Image (cartoon, rainbow, N blue to C red; front, side):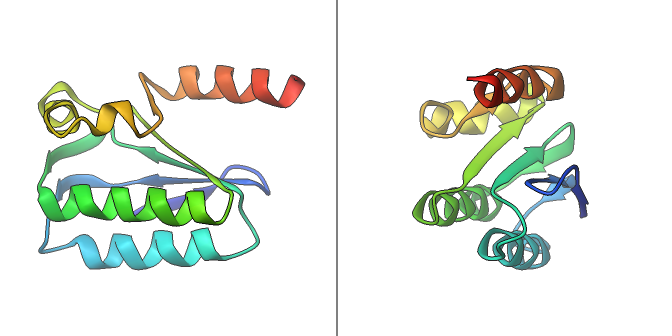
Length: 116
């Protein structure tokens, strides 16, 4: 799992391969620590390299989103492959979680919000 600090306020996570119960604990720990820290106030999960997501992986995203919300921080997801996006659609989480087509869409909306 890669975490990159883009600037002092935005952290991105780039999970890859299979995001399942077998490997989700590391991701969950990293993102929870980042969300709880005062270092970042926005988080972006770039899913472009994710091949498969199970219910445990999905619950990790929901848990991280809820934690971010409770702390008044932003949490978004981008670049979800079609084979993984269907899981978000079936669970209707695509209507709850801020999801962007790609990083450029996220950056454009973020720039517009900062300018406002």
